[in-house]
Image (cartoon, rainbow, N blue to C red; front, side, top):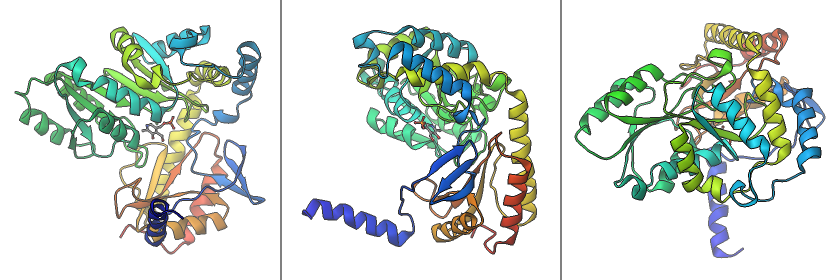
Length: 391
Ligand SMILES: Cc1ncc(COP(=O)(O)O)c(C=O)c1O
């Protein structure tokens, strides 16, 4: 092994001793809530397929139809080989769904954040280095976008609008363009940002408010359209409640035109393939009609939270379909995940650096595809386990 490679091996060894090493486990997805691994079946409580659309026949069918009609790949960036008709049609639907003037399809949520943010924070275009006020628990892709922009984030305590207000007040005389950067539903905690208060601060201090709705799109708000309609720019994915892949940014026409000219993730990346566009298009037709599934999903999560806190678990500030059981140490979280697996439940331990040190957890993600029996069986198993509270 060359010397440099041995440094990577050291990193893995360190991860092993911290109980934070990650592995790829072979599985087959049987349906929206069932996983098969090594010929064992598991009820899947880790998926972001919140509405169970990933296996929906209508999404699969339109995906197949569009492969037939447009081909397997899109061959280049939309700026190079042109914009096939589905892009514009879907972007119009998204803009309408999100009540914004315009929308732009991106390759993935991760790629959207990591390339849209550097474009928006471009010092040359803005004439000064911007001030970016960001929630401490923002997703890794947003941190990457800020790092790629070369800006220093001004980070406020998680979901703490008062702290954000203090920081904005402190910098009020700074003439540089200002941005506020948050999620609406936090991916590892399932709590909700105080959007109204943040939006009011954004207006008061003349900021541009950017919000990632990855875990709210399709799940919360009117017809599943999300809850950050007061944000100026909303970024979201089709990889979660939409059951597919890809992402969008919903914004003004000016921002869309700017991104077409400046966003590296759009300019230098091959566009999404027609098969994926087909499933997004079909999901867009369905999601708005799924109020019943959305209610069922939130009722299931609320029932789980009520029961699990009664038996002594800590599920933080969860208010949505994402319910963490905060354990504390990575080792204990891994042990609980293994016990759950033995009992037939797929519920992955989430450990640092994905979550802050000392807050390793099992992140339960509910889906409209879960039955009452699935949830009841899970609760029964958890009530038998020894590990209960965060350290
Ligand atoms: C808040 C947030 N933003 C962005 C992403 C990335 O989205 P995608 O999986 O579509 O790349 C995730 C993924 O988990 C997320 O939780």
